[in-house]
Image 1 (cartoon, one colour):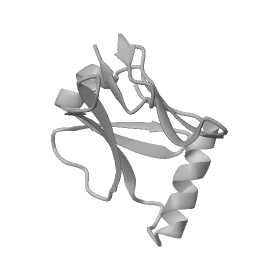
Image 2 (cartoon, rainbow, N blue to C red):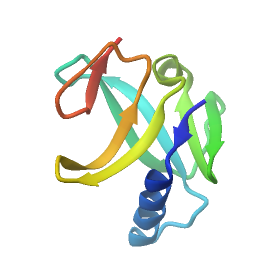
Image 3 (cartoon, rainbow, N blue to C red):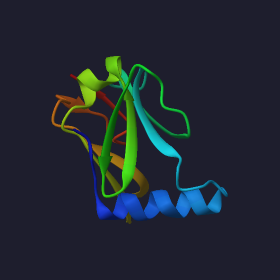
Image 4 (tube, rainbow, N blue to C red):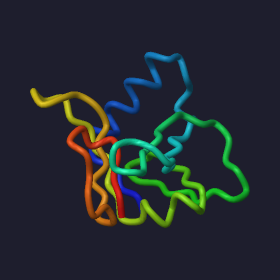
Length: 108
């Protein structure tokens, strides 16, 4: 399961409206190689559900995850911060053994 905080949901809805996208767009979360810790999160809007996707829904937000990325993301919470230390989506991932200072990459 992947969870979404209230702040992340609000920001997702704001971005959908700003980009003129309908609310039927899903959030695709995946893991790719790269970054200073070895793996990076990728977050995008996607209207299509692939046959191999796992689909989660929390607080009305549909999240798509490919099976390979799911191994790294189970139990993750998607959050949004707009504080003094930076603005953006954050992944609270219990599977990550190490994260970089910016929070955009991790290792397991």
